[in-house]
Length: 248
Image (tube, rainbow, N blue to C red; front, side, top):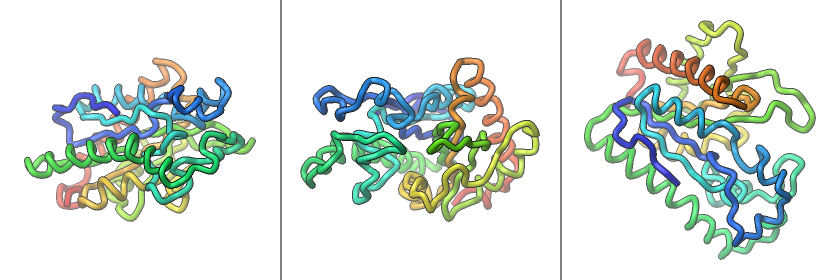
């Protein structure tokens, strides 16, 4: 887990839960081949690079988890099986098979709790200081899923609080060549909004989860283009919505 630009002055606080593919050798790499542990199953390719660029562009703090989501997915609560998945799409994860309660708790204590505790301390300190804050989580998704091509390019995801998502989507027509959709390619019914619920909704903070198709993030030029587009939509959204509608 790492924190970037902790003193950033932006209203936005960025989270990147799937920033790394790192699996320690002490876990025998979960029994995965090299290509499997470098694939999208293990992390969100391009998400950290995009998050760092957004952090710089917005002057926003960023908190990122640097352990593979196959070890523990920081966007999942401890009680669900997908927190330490035994399969991701077509890839089986032998090292997660038949984990007992003690082994799962060790993963929680090692990966999930430090990440969540850091986010909680950071957000609570901002609230105590009276700093306006919105939470934006940054992810990427694969262009194909179970062999089917995904046409959506930017997903704007929300749970019960849709304030920021609505404002972003209302400005998406400024990107006429982009496919920008609500709750695609995933939605709250897929269990992907845990971080939004835990860190933002519980504190009354406006929030959104941004999912970017990872073939748009394969190089610096692509990352910067998406960064510029997201920065524009976020700035417009925060300016457009009255303070009473965006903040608790």
